[in-house]
Length: 205
Image (tube, rainbow, N blue to C red; front, top):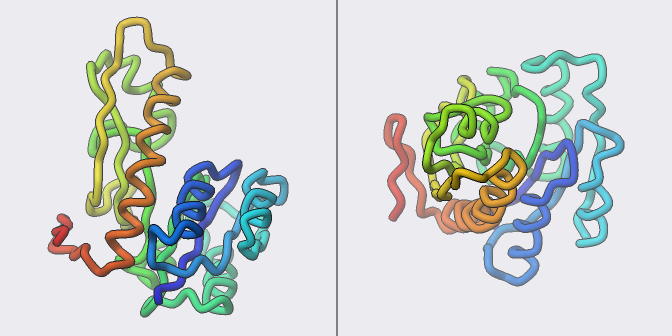
């Protein structure tokens, strides 16, 4: 069975959703570790309550994309059996850019969820970007992580309608509901070996 690691920086609501789906035997994967780069991340207590081990690798003083920091991540991941051969790493509100070395080490085994319909509105504050641009629809995307910013092969997407009276907060809530649906689904597809990366696309069987 594949080993799952989830990386968080805050509350980790997507982490919680994935772990609860695993506990209900909806996803055939073994969650082995939740890692936070922030000692005060609220998601750590949530993961512990669910019964998953947690570790803190404090990123204070390390710039994003720093291999010195990411090499510490690799050590902890591999200590818990999350390897490039049998592991999956899910980023769930992990507010750090990964180093190219880390991404190459775990190529095709790192997933992220982004609150927009990529390739539109990559990077930070996607909901605000969508609102300011005046789009009628936005949503969320689960994708594999590559060396760009939100540019990796897309796995699943879900759309929400934006109304004239929507705010950044109300759009965020709508999108988060969809995130909670598609992220566990993407993990399940991966765990069952149903996702194949072909070039910059994914093929789901």
